[in-house]
Every structure is written in C-alpha cells, then in structure tokens.
Image 1 (cartoon, rainbow, N blue to C red):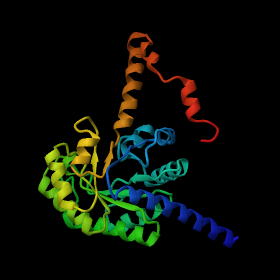
Image 2: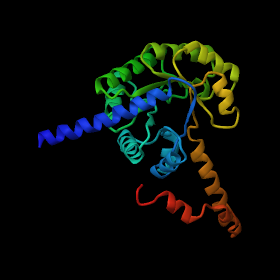
Image 3: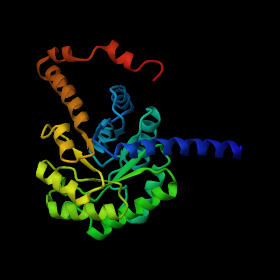
Length: 285
C-alpha cells in the first residue's frame, strides 16, 4: 500500500514538474498570452482555442461563487486550483492573491499546499487589504516573496513564482516605488514580475528595462495596447485578469435586465448555440 502511495505521489510530482518546465520555457523568449478562465468550462474552451497556458483569476472565481474578489477561502481556492490543473492538459498558473496570510511563514505554508494541486506557477501580491495602508511594508513584502520561494524550492515542483506589486490598482500609482519593489522581488526569488494597472507604454518599458532579464507580465484589461505593441516593449507575458469573466457577466446582465425590465427576449438571440457548446464539451473532455 505504501509503495502504491509513493508511486502515485511520484507520478503526480512528475506531472507537475513537466508542466512547470513547459510554463517556464514560455517565459524565455518572445511574448505569450495567458488568459484567465474562472471555471473548468471556460478553462477547457480556452485550451481548445490554442492558448499555451492559462492563469486563474481570483475575481472571476469569487464572482462565480457569488462573492466579491478576495473572499474565497484558502480551502475553496485550493480545491479550485486542483480542479483547474487536472481538468486541462496545459500549464495553469494560480492567482494566489496575497498568499492567504500576512506572516511570511504562513505564506510559505500556503504556497506549499498550493504546490500539491498540480499548478505550474503562482503569484504573490503585496496588497494588504487595508485601505489606509494598502501595500505591505517594503521589508515584509520582500520577506513574503522569499518565503514563497523557499516553499517552491522545498516542493521540488519547479513552479514559476510571480511577484506582484499592486500600487497602481490600490491607489498608490508610484512608478519609482513599484520598480523598487519589483527589483527586490526579483532578488528575493521571483521568476516573473507583474505590476497590474500599468497602462502607459513608457511606464511598461521602464519596468521591463529595470527588472531585465527577468520576464514581465502585463495586465491587458482593456484595449489600451495590442500584443504586438507589448511585445515590442519587451513584455514576455500578457494576462487579462477578470476581464473575460466581466465580458461574460456583461452579456448575462444585459439579457437578464431586458427580460426583467421589458419582458422581451431579444438578447437571447445572441447566445452561442447549445450544439456548439456541447461539441466543445464532448465525451473526451
């Protein structure tokens, strides 16, 4: 029985390390898009469209549960990550929010738990959730990345660690401080750097140059830039955060409001045919 357990454990670790290796290789040159599904169905459809990797979205997942962003528990999130990573054959990286803890040692313990779910990478952000002081103190933010790095090394999975500095989306849009934090995160062991909310190409180029040769992820939550423009700026990875989920919610709300307010059903005419969706979720999926 113990031999069977160890064999299954080693097989799982091998699968995780293989996906982590593929995910890491994607960051080595060029630029790729890692879209953000919010459930297994959206993940499978994105994989079928040919994307090479996926990333979860904390906001999109929380909304699917009827909760605001950052209100899904660690236990619920770990189950979600396991379902997502096991449900598709391409690498999945996790929006792991702030590590579901403040203290570095607790962040490390939670990252270790996430490393068992099959994900190929995860991100740790420096937002505190405190409106009066929305970013963790610089030293603490760095220590949290260091703890995540140690946990990944101990796991043997080779997961890609992304260090996120949230200043531009929590009311502290200071480019100099953002770059200072990203450089420190890189030195603390982050493999990829990410400052969501950057929209100026000049700011993006500054971040890319400052953390080089580490790869940079840019959030494309609207049409402020194209993939070609971001590639030209040196960006290696593009994600969309909760934007795809918001697009889906937009269509749902528009049709539902028409029904509720007018008793008409024209919005339903824009729906994807059931047969097309059923074909996408065939017996082999």
